[in-house]
Amino acid sequence: SSDLVLGVFGCLGRTSIKQYMPLKPIKRGIKVWAAACSKTGYLLNFDIYQGKQGDPEIGLGERVVTLLASSFDNKGFCFYFDGFFSNVPMMEKMLKKNNFGCGTIKSNRKYFPSTILKNDKSLTTGEFDIATSKKELSVSKWKDRGTKCVNVISNFHDTNIIGAVYRKDHFGNKHLIKCPISIVDYNKHMGGVDHFDQFHSFYNISWKSRRWWMKLIKVINTNPNTPNTCVGCVWVVGG
Image 1 (cartoon, helix red, strand yellow):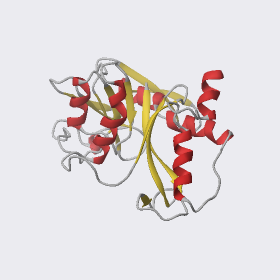
Image 2 (image 1 turned 90 degrees about the vertical axis):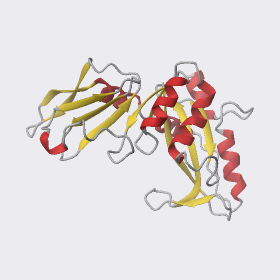
Image 3 (image 1 turned 135 degrees about the horizontal axis):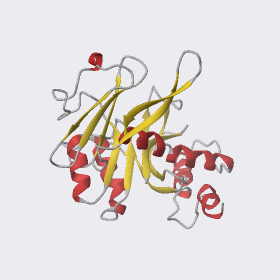
C-alpha cells in the first residue's frame, strides 16, 4: 500500500512554477506530488506541479491520483490520501483499473451521501454510520472526540468488519472505542511520504541557491527510477 501527499521545496529563484501556499510551513516554493510506500517510506512516484493542465472538468486532486497511480494499474495496489484528493467518481474509476483507494472526504463533495448518513449532532463519541453503493463504494462517518465527525470513503473495505481504536478519558485511562475498519486502516497506512522525508533529511543533498532548477535536480535525485538514486531509498533497501 502507498499514500499520496503534497510536498513543497523552498525556492529563492524566479520561475513560473513557483507557488504561494500561505497555510504551509514553506510559503513559497515548488509544489511536488509524491506517492510513497506506507510501510517503508520508499518513494514510488512523483510529479512536479506546473499549473493547470489536462481536462478542466477533472479536479486537480483526481488528476494527481490518476497520474501517480497509473504506473500500478491492474496490479491491485492500495492508495491512501486525504480529503483534498478524494471524490466519489474518482473512486469508481480506480476500481475499473483494479486500483483500490481509501481516504478522508469532505462532506460538501459532489455525490456525498449526506441525505443517507446521520447528522453529526445525532452521533455521540464512538458511534458511526455507513452508507454503501452498488458499485462497492462505502462512506463511513465516525464521531471521534470533538463536535465534527470523520468521513472516510473506500472502494475495497468490508463494511461488516468493525475495528477499534484506543482513546484516553479525562483520567488518562485507555479505552477501546469501536470504529469502521476503513478508518483503522487509514490511520495505519497514512504517513509513507512523511517516512520518506525523514529518511531523506538524514542525508540532505540540497543547498541554498537562487537557481530554481537546482531544486528540480534535488527532486529528480529523490526518484528511485533515475541513476542518481536517493540515499533515503537506498537506506530503505539496504536497511
